[in-house]
Image (cartoon, rainbow, N blue to C red; front, top):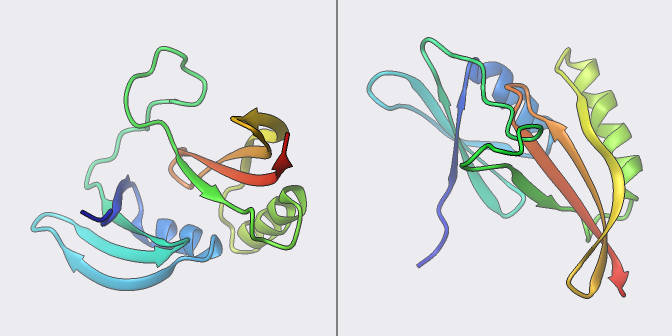
Length: 141
């Protein structure tokens, strides 16, 4: 079996498309699900499905609520990127702000040992408030 996609419900599909395009995703296909607009975006060796919610409610704050149960966040690997994580985040913030899209840093780049590797880890929110994690491997411990 192979992984096919991750689905995200959004309050505004056009704004969400613009946000994820700033992250490097590209439009694969637009469609409807019978009651709402939807699309698949490709990037980061995966596919995102965006679904516009007709009457959106605010998302739960899974990042700050330690009792939250459910899907927590998407994580993106920047280990092969030539720039340090902090530089990449600053460039992303500038790109998002230039398009009048939100940029909220939830966790500044922080070093974290995971297994036998040292990572730089940071979190931001997407345009609907959902947490996104970015990791960059700094090497083995």
